[in-house]
Image 1 (cartoon, rainbow, N blue to C red):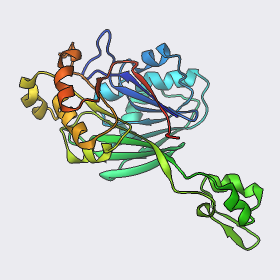
Image 2: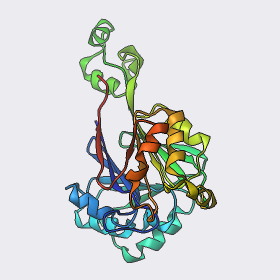
Image 3: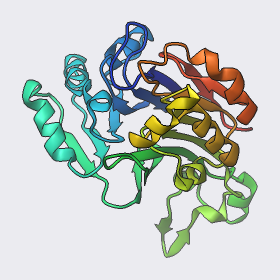
Image 4: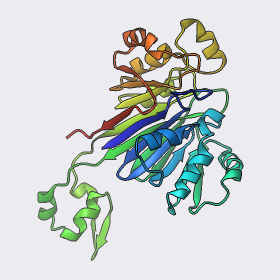
Length: 302
C-alpha cells in the first residue's frame, strides 16, 4: 500500500487556502517528500502525520516556491527527536543550496546525506522506493520523479521443499537475496514466480510538455502534473516561462494513459481551477483537480 498526499498545490506564491508545492508519499513506515514549498508543515500537521518518519526529500529544482519550506521542515524534524539520517536528492548545486538554507537551521540531531543528480535520467533506491529522476524542460535545471514500488513474484513453498531449501533461507530468498551455504547456492528465481505488478506514481512540475514526461508516466497508477494556466490565451505566457497549461498536461496524460491524472502547481491568478475541468476531461476523462490535502491510498493488485 502506498499513500500519496498533495501538501501544497500552488506556484509562485502561497495563498490563504493554497500553499506552495509539495508531495508526500508514505510506504512501509517511510515518508518521502518531493519539494517542500512554504506551507508544507501546515498540511502535514492538519493530516496528523509525523515529521519524524520523513527520511527522503527530493527536489525538482531550486526556485523558491519549491524549496522555501526546507528550514522549517528540518527544525520540525529536529523537534520530533529524529536522529536517523535524512537523505536529500536534487539537481546540481544541491550542497550549495542546502548549506545556504541551513544558516537558520545549523544544528540538527541527525546527519544529512546529499545525493546530486548527475545524469539526464538517474535511478536511486531508497527504503523500498525505486526513484527515477528525469530531466524536464524548465528555465533552469529541473527534474520530474517517478516513484515505483516493485513487487516480486509469489513465493512457491512446494518448489522450495522439492529443492530441499532450508526453512531459514526462505525469508531472505523472498526478499531477493542470494544465499550460499555448504557449497550450494540458492537464488530467488528458484522459489519465486514471475514479478507481479507494482505501483507507479509520476510527479512533474515546472516544465513544457516533453516526450520524456509521457514516456515516464506511461501506465502509471497516478500521474501528477503541473497545470499552471487555465485560460487558453495564456499559452504564450506558459511557453515564455517554460510551464504548461492544464490542457497541455491533459494531452500528456492522453498519451501516457495513466489510471488517473491530478493537476497541481496552479498560478496565483487561477483562483478557480474547477472552471476548466469540463474542457480538461474532454482531453483526458480521468483528470482530477489537485488541492491541498488531496489524498489517495494506492493498493497492489491481488
